[in-house]
Length: 82
Ligand SMILES: [Zn+2]
Image (cartoon, rainbow, N blue to C red; front, side):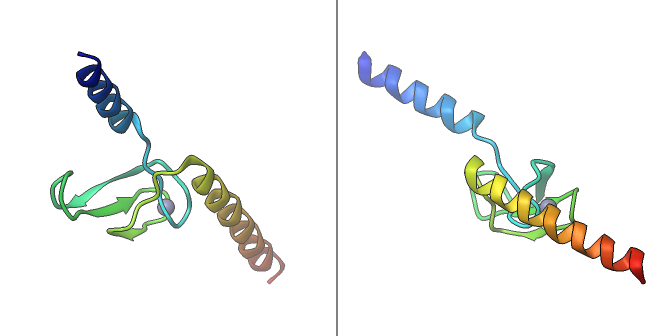
């Protein structure tokens, strides 16, 4: 009884886990190709990332977002001064 409940909870947790873009940290990603439980290709609507690798860790994704924002800032600054 307890074991099956635990399994249910695990499934719930897995289903609720968010996925992040490894390039910009956005959650605005979707399956471009493949099946959800097999090798899949993801696409990011925010930065246009296209690949099989995906981040499922919120802490990591935050770091990615920060770095992405920094890069973006630097790029737009360089463009503006040009
Ligand atoms: Zn992205």
